[in-house]
Length: 373
Image (cartoon, rainbow, N blue to C red; front, side):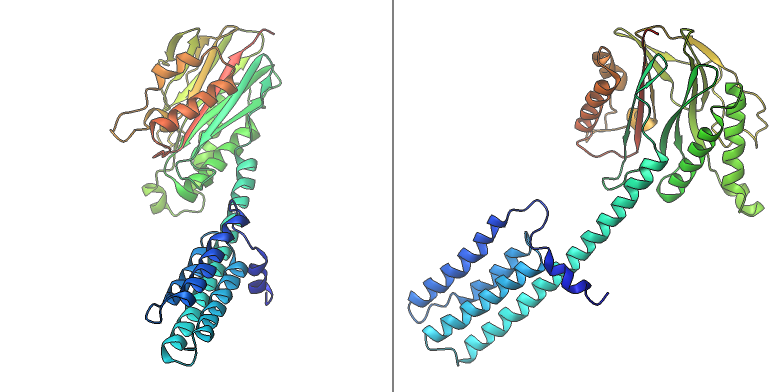
């Protein structure tokens, strides 16, 4: 621990900055020194030397900043010696002020570099958590080609309340989940992890899609409320909108249960059809308290070449600076001939361009294309 302050001096340059930038403060020191010595006695440019360590802070670490500060102080002393005024109070005050500024600049570098190292460690942990919780979807399962896209609302975040997952069953079918947990922050991440864990544990062994929905609702509600008092349970509204899909390998259909989630989109060529189930059930987490004991399954045709899009409301509710929603259903048909991965790359670029790089809510999209068996 005692060596840690010295370790900050071993990082000479900030990431993304070239050592060639050191020419700027060095050139400033040399120029000020030469011009000041050659100027008339009433002209003093020495105070400009303070800019050298101040500029260095922007692109270098504490070690290089300290070096530039020392060179600036040496230049100020040299000016005083060559002009025969080193013993004057004015030059001595300038030297002291330059030393103080240099020390402050070095301190700023040390504090900044430590903070950046802490943020890097936190981001590494977040990336590890994302790889565990929001695992990449399989690119191919049975006759399906799948791709997933997750865009966090916060620039430095890697995981929020939106989620998706896939599982293979013993009945030669693929089950998929997409969901959006209420709220944001750590509570939403915790509930998203809870729902993903329940799905992965049960999706492959529950005999029917309705039984899987009942299991997810019960597991979500029980786990999120088991440590709360009765009063807290009455006032807490933990829930998640979700769509559950079961797509058999050898039958050109898709079985769907919607729990308060935006409708999936079926794209056949350039024709887009929202899959509006006859019954949209309560979100996951509300089923038990409201006495839901069964879930209706809607079956839709899903032929070879067709594309299914699952998404969260962060996509369709994304607004630009003028308050206009992203025209999701108008843009997507232009990319239906692309592979799912390519389609999602087009969608990501177009969505971020619409909102000028800033989303107000997390967004997730899953693209599924049926191929020939």
